[in-house]
Amino acid sequence: MFEGALSAFWLSTAVIFVAELGDKSQLMAMTFATRYRARDVLIGITAATALVHLASVGIGYFIGSSFEKYQGAIAICAGIAFLGFAAWTLRGDELTEDEAEKARKATGSALLAVGLAFFLAELGDKTMLATITLAVRENWFGTWIGSTLGMVVADALAIVVGAVLGRHLPEKLIKYGAAAAFAVFGVLLVAEGAGWV
Image 1 (cartoon, helix red, strand yellow):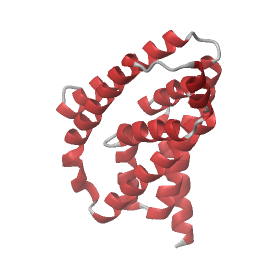
Image 2 (image 1 turned 180 degrees about the vertical axis):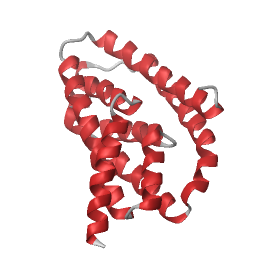
Image 3 (image 1 turned 45 degrees about the horizontal axis):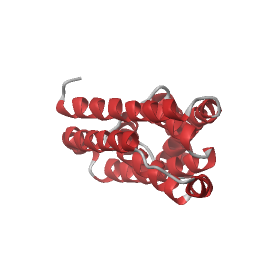
């Protein structure tokens, strides 16, 4: 039992880390790190990843490969949500200086924004499908912990880059860049779900 969990842990950590490199989630992590504190982004990513990957191993353990037929619909729904995030980012909110200072100190809104975005982005993503596939064959607990760790470590690299860039980029550039990134992710998810790519 323990040996199976340990081998599943190492295998899923490596597989998901590699799958996450250059993925849209890593680019999102970098984008969020330009707007929020790195700690809040990392906590949001970790919570969302743990939930999605727990669901993934559950799916893999209980129903196996029959889940794949719903992948397109899930990707389209997530894509539409991302297009909404893009519009919301462009619309923006006007803050007074006092409100801006409170927002910089607040963690709840950042955690919710990052967690929700990552949760939606991972639904039907290749890392979710890879986790399901691993859970069909490997120990579910080792797969869950390993896949979560692999993704969080890969995204932590992007958070460091985003946090450094965020200190040197103008706010308007960050706003338009974030909106463009959400729009691109949304279009790609819809296209993927519809089978166009």
